[in-house]
Image 1 (cartoon, each protein chain N blue to C red):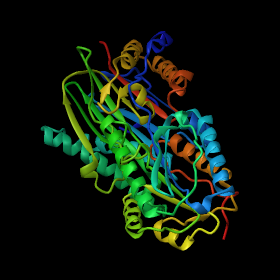
Image 2 (image 1 turned 180 degrees about the horizontal axis):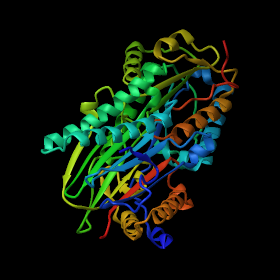
Image 3 (image 1 turned 180 degrees about the vertical axis):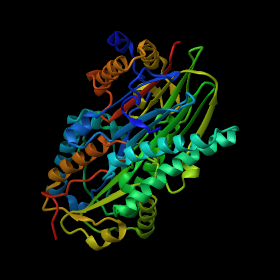
Length: 271
Length: 221
């Protein structure tokens, strides 16, 4: 199964137990500087019903950041899909290994491409967040300052990985990091997620208290209610993507953040 | 349908603004008396006005001023740019630059500590040295500290020589090329500095800040 970028992978009604609505919108500072949107996301449904989502933010200072973000998203999704065809993780260690190996594969893809293009890996610097969402577990990995928030059936919110900040406000870590093992934050959240939200740093300060890693419920509750209402046809998903895009590009969001912003909302399909 | 949900969304307002600290390290020795100190003071006013013109810079940039002449003095401890009011500096005395550099580094270190304790993100601090002479105190240990702190990216240290400043000594203090001020163009220099700090204070994660070239106020060799 090929991972899809920015759009649902099937033309028929979604067979998965998960529905996914996501959008990336260029920040006003990028419009001003005429730099492209360097955020990227993608997702795919595994044949066994799990949903795999990846979100990346290309570094503003990286020459080929957009390309880098796209490569790591595609790379990490393809790696999970390929491994899933061979085995299913049966222990917590196996889950952690799967996430790590997927990041490793995505990084190798970038390094290989960079070498062929005679570019330094730094030119493709991008943060990367991966989540494998199943009925009884959310397995995720993060390098950089993206975030993933899970809502339980009881409605409690939890940020699974702490967004990683570098020494300074404008520094963070990237999927091309030389010591991936050390920098990659892998978390296995056991339970049944009602909703999951994945987003890039452009939304961080609006969506959570960053220092305390505490999601802001009044931000997420309406978004998850919106995700619940999305119908189960491709057309309704497309309408929902448009609505989410319009929200991310609204004045009230742009007044608070000038950066690119990506938000992917995942909800259980009601059957 | 969708807009109903989106209208209800509220944003977290508990995250503090990132701060962008800058220490001005200003030589007010006797040789600055007359036109130089007058132009410097006009430049400081321009610095204040320029920073306050940009809403985000006014919130994020924090200014401190250390002068060195008769004594080494904290003229202004770190203050948010929107509250900063340029006060005229007075000249007189020697050039205790070494002690002044050490004090500036100490102010930066303490400010970082405050940020960390309060969970406030911050940009790399800048120290901006202005002098028209040569150090009259021991300066080599201060220079070593600057070099160590530059190497660990703890600060960015810039030096500008005015008139007959000892550019050779400045070159030994900074790891960056020291600049020579054209005449007494303090005002142009401070406008450039405020614009550079504004750019930094707007920069986002992963973004390195390209500084505009200091044309218009520095001597091009």
